[in-house]
Amino acid sequence: MKRNIFVFIALILMVLQMPVTYGKESVSQQNSTMKTKDVLLIYDQLAVDTVYQSNLFTIQTLLSTLSQSAEITSMDDYSDGRLSAYQKVIILKNTKNPITNLAFIADCQNYSGVSLYIGFAAPELIPELDNFLISRQLGRTVSLSVNELVFDSIWVDDLRVIDEPSGPGEATIGVGLATYPFSKTVGSLTYVPTFVGGQGFALGLGEILSDWFGLGTSTHMTLLIPDIYPFSDLNMVIKTSDAFYANGIPFTLGVVPLDENMDFPAMTRFYQVLRYVQSRNGTIILHRPSPITVSDGNTVLSQKMHAVITKMVKNGVYPLGLATEESLFFDEVSQVNPLNLFSSGIILPDDSTAESGRKETWALRFVSLGISLETIENTSSRDRNFGYYPVNTTIVLPLPENEAALDAQLKIINDKWLSLTDYKDLNNYWTIGQNAVTSSPVGIRLNGRPVSLSYDEEPIAEYYRYQEIPEYSLEKIFTTGNAFLLTVVGIIIVLFTVIVVFSRRVYLNKFRKIVSNDEKKETKKKSRDQEGNTP
Image (cartoon, rainbow, N blue to C red; front, side):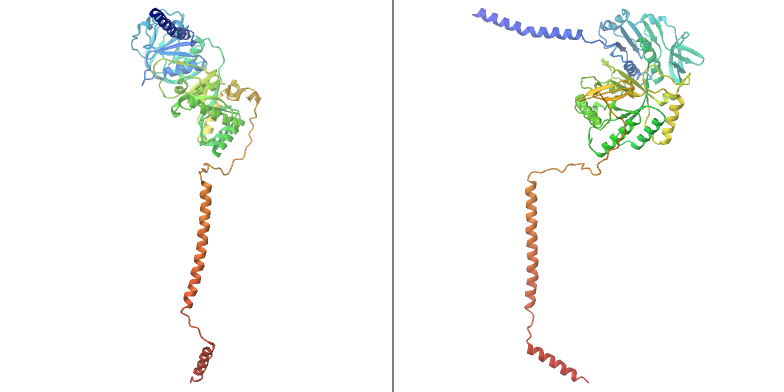
């Protein structure tokens, strides 16, 4: 009997152990079959409070504009053997500090894939770096030539250049009369010795990355007026739309989504202005709100975005993309992230610093890099037509404060002969609930049907009840009771008035003397006699 009990217990233990083993195997299998990103990006330090602090964000943004996703990790957090999972690796060295992760050094020395090295050289990491002849120059004003465009007057404190002639058609760095290549490739290693914050160097690296990934696609340039609220200067929005339409300039309007008071007359007027903008060849895109302002994170944020977009479509406004700052674009990605709603977007620069630690970036089908109008002014073209930057770009143009500022913006755009792309032509698409919106050069479609972008002004309710009158329990009973009491009190007041008047008459009559007719006659006779005796 005891033997049977022991056998039974052993069988139970074996059964309980099987799911644990299976669970470990399934997790291991899932990890081994996870989709690998396009490239591995490894950096040494964030270099906060230096000219290199924005480098990591800039590279992430450039990868997204090229529709390339990346796994990002620091050199200290690098795990042994991770390089072997990637055919391409980007190494960003922002400081001269030595590398202490021996596993990373060993993997780099044995790596057989394609490498892009940016920043301070570390020959102990990649011995081939000793093959590049580097010239160091302190405190220089340089110019960058990228894709037949020239960026002038860029100050660099610590300039390191490859000391050899540049080849035809490649990005170059100009120092005085000398010209140096922006990068150089030897075998499977491409080296960019100097990379500092600024849109000039960012666009130069964009050309290097585009060639490094073997991308030969054409690029686009769009124009964005960001941060438009219902309480913005809507008259100036209308004037700007008319001016751009008259000059044949396609543009996009970045609208900040508000999920409260969407039925107010102010919102109705706002939707009318947005419809007018669409009729002037303008395109509407949405800003991504910060998850910090939403208490329940991305889930509630996504639900609010759904409500805002559904309300906009109901009012004839069709947003086609998303505009977001770098720090929000590279925030944690989940299935309910608002970025998943759209196929295209614009990444706006900000002053934030990338967070340390391992993370992953991702890319939409079309992403453009936000640049300022000042960058356009400081860029010169060798041809009459301005041409295009090596990556997709969007000119971020603040809403002008007055007509004089608007005229100044138009003058810069027209004088530069910019070739701007209509955002609707980028084949955008999204699906939310029952609504599916697509755009192409032939127009916008809602659920497969073309929509009209002509403007029809609709009347707005002159009187609007901003707050519903609350309904209280027993309200009718109290109302009826109040009316009854008022009636009773009114009757009592009337009766009291009558009684007072009647009582006064009775009281006065008590003091009145009743005179007979004979006394009246006698009184009259005495008065006549007195008149006759008067001398």
